[in-house]
Length: 91
Image (cartoon, rainbow, N blue to C red; front, side, top):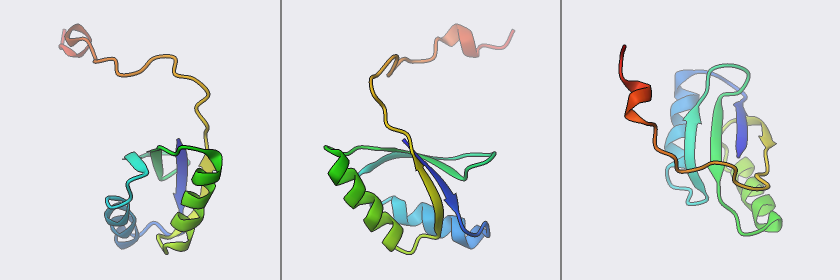
């Protein structure tokens, strides 16, 4: 997982970032986040060296990334679990 903070928060900058990452195969998912970060990305990489190369390319791509934080998944605890319908039904 990668937390991303953009250097500017204009709509044009957000659209530029969001459009550009659509074409990057290592980025599996990306969510716009409210709070201290702008985006949370799920990234796939075969090794730490490949991840470092990916991040260097991403930073050099001119996407307006000011800061990023890498969160390395050490093991899955729960994944691919659908939300039970009973949890989303209104009471």
